[in-house]
Length: 344
Image (tube, rainbow, N blue to C red):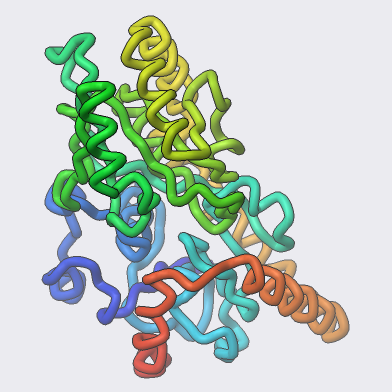
């Protein structure tokens, strides 16, 4: 059964990628730089599968049949897909699409209570550069890798940054997107979205994977994805207030042995989320799991299908209730109307 990965030209995250595709060229990951958006995750998956010899296509339009995989907010919740198409959405900080037949979720905790879904880890950053050992036991540079709105605003105030400098002799640096793969000059990563009690079920743990694989200690918040894949206090630390971030950084600064233990345990944990570990999961999905699910769907009676869509709508309702609109959601509200041009 033919498997396609769908990305519309409107959502292409780098100029020239779609033109390269149309000419039959291959999109080289080495040229991506940041490659951090949800849509580039689709590109990465297609690229690595093709490199591994797995038969799959990258398409700019919705096919009429087979299996199609796309980011969940690529379509309106009320879209009607061709009847011979088995649709699989990927949730990357997005709500599930109720008219999809199956969901690939990048937060293990969320996947546990979402019907018709499977946990598939987010790819780590392409071409990741590890911390340079030349820095030794230096502990001065706190880095955040991501868009500034994804870091708790309390950690961006002059008061907190001044406290960080005065009490610990450390400084916070926001890495530009073109350096999101480069951890060579980073001593510790802080990635806390906010200090609320939210567990951010719609967020993946990609920042944690990257820090593990780069050999850098990590301080996160209450994110369910961090807790589902990591072990708080063992391979990463948790902070629930601005002052606790300072306290955790002080612990790490004063205890090089603790820092090294976090790095060592993180590297052990990170092996399960390396490209080499994630690729076999996608190969099984493409060659075994999804084709089998598509065949099962064709065999369902009209009553079974009706019950399936009812459970999907219920899942979408609860999913929507738990998720606040993000920058990406607002952007998609503007883009979705134009996607009708990409139906056959």
